[in-house]
Length: 305
Image (cartoon, rainbow, N blue to C red; front, side, top):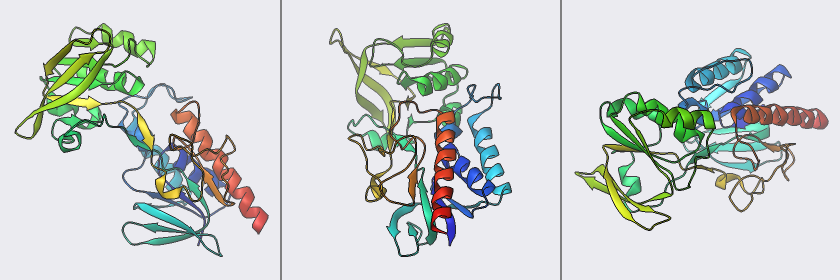
């Protein structure tokens, strides 16, 4: 039995593992996909204190290496349920494993939000992508669209503008919600066009692959279309908390309602990172949550002997 089971291997979960191990507790981190969470897809991260610039993938690798060097165990499996037992908690995975722990930290992160348009899911991997770092090179010399106007969208569009013939940014608002420095850098590029106050109303495809976008200007109502070889979605994220709502309450958007203390209504269960209701979702706030949750778990463990 582990002292702490951490579900999720992003910055929150891995930081919790570091703090748990430094406190002398046995720790298991269970991650369903790849360690690092959303930060692993960022081509360049410049807001981590003490680090001028680093790729998200490199940062994620360093976090995993640090946690494992301290003695944390890691498993690549998908936790589908957690049950309360007399001894603590039992985490069941889709792969058929069951891991026992005295405490649980839910750091399950978030997933990409879709537009909900007809045929959308069928186009994922067939011209529709979420990750310019992963898939941008496939569109070298071609025309692509970036749907969204936040930091993630702007960072990815900058990367795409370096390899693609043209990048069209489709933003539903009349302004970018991302950082001004990123927006200014994009607007200055000759191969970038920005369509503000514009909604994607449909996808067009040929041979099962994306070929174009149907658009509507939200101010004038004008409907147009653009031909693209690929499109990248960056329209927000949503929590993956459904399997754990019997342990931790959620708000109307599905985020855990725990405060900055990272406590839940279930003794021995804590939350951390982007899956928690909070004002700011950044790598530093996720790591701060991880540290807070781990120390809270340690205090709980010490209290029960």
